[in-house]
Structure formats: structure tokens, C-alpha cells
Image (cartoon, rainbow, N blue to C red; front, side, top):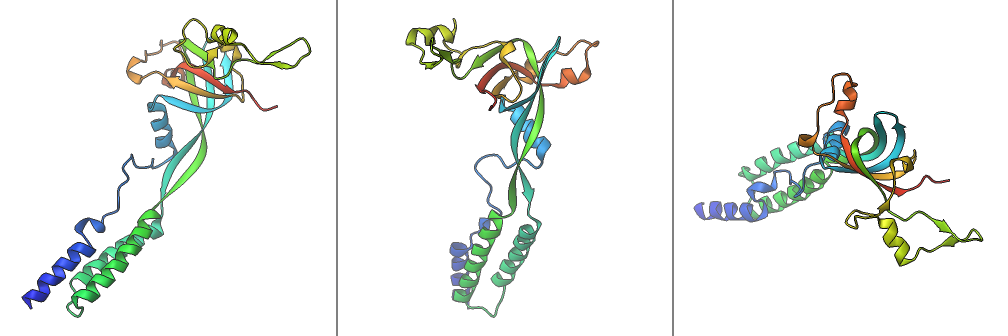
Length: 228
């Protein structure tokens, strides 16, 4: 009897280790639980890419970007299946009517079913979300590609190496080519670099509170112009 018990424990340890019932955690961060958390993560990461929806160039330069966010939605059916499979595993492990081989076979099947349901436990959704940003006083605007130039006949002309160097501007370390705040337009695809919160300065009391809450943009790179 003791020999059979030791054999059972050995088979259970190999076929169904203690951590097998626990839901496998991904190596990277878990998916956001909702749209707000996904947006907050994107903003805190310091860089977001999306389409310019609205652009205001008044005394307070701001823009609204449409970005694609991903967040996890729990699959209730899969989570219930996982709970039931864990109960089944406990019952199989303590069932005196099963021999060691039968236990190992049933537990192996439970492992396969668990793995399948764990993969389906969280559904990743993608949605568009608008993010309001505030341009910093010293924001740098760049273009990912040089502006198009044309010859006398109106044909697109390829810039020379010298022209490209000039278009880069005085600081070659900056990405892309020189641009200006006036070049920002709706429906452009852009990447915004955001200032860290600890560097953000509180807005004066006479300014709109929403303005103070908007993340500050330190650099904006124009990736693509609106499709005509």
C-alpha cells in the first residue's frame, strides 16, 4: 500500500505539478482592465502615436489625438471552466478508486483543458480613444519625411544629400526634419513625446482646469499627411 502511495505522489508531481493549476502569468505586464487604464498606461509611457482629430492654435495650443488602445475583457465562461477543472483535479487526486496510471491520465487531460481555458480567460479588445494633449511652450515639431519638392515641370524631385542635411536643421540628433507648429493639421498621423508628470508645472489659477490636466507635449513628429 505504501509503495502504491509513493508511486501515486511521484506521478502526480511529474504529470501535474503544484503550479499547473494556477493561471499562467505572462512575462510582460498584464493587459489593462479597461479603456481608461489602457489610455493612462499609454500616456505614462511618454509617447503615443495616432491621428490628429482636433487642433487648436490659439493662446493655449492643444490637440486631440485618436489612438488605438488594447485592454483585456474577462471571459466569464472560461474562468468558470478553470474553477471547475481545479475542483476536478482535486477530486481525481484523492479518489481511492483510481490506480496511479488512471490518475495520471485523467490529470493530464485536465491539464490540457486548463491550458486551453487559460488562453481564453482574457479577450483582448482594440478600440479608438481620444486623448487631449497640451503643447509645451518650447515644443519641437518635426517631420518624419522631408517635404516634397518639384522641378520646373512639376515633377517630384529627389532631394540631394546637401538638401537633406539642411532640412535636418541645426540639431542632427533630433528625428526627421524641421517643421513648425503651423504645419500641424487635422487628420495627420503623428507621434507625440510627452513630458514626465514630475516636470509638469501647475497652470495659473486663471486658466482652465482641463488645460492643467492635459499631458504636455515636448515634441511632435508628423508621420503622414491626410489622405486626399
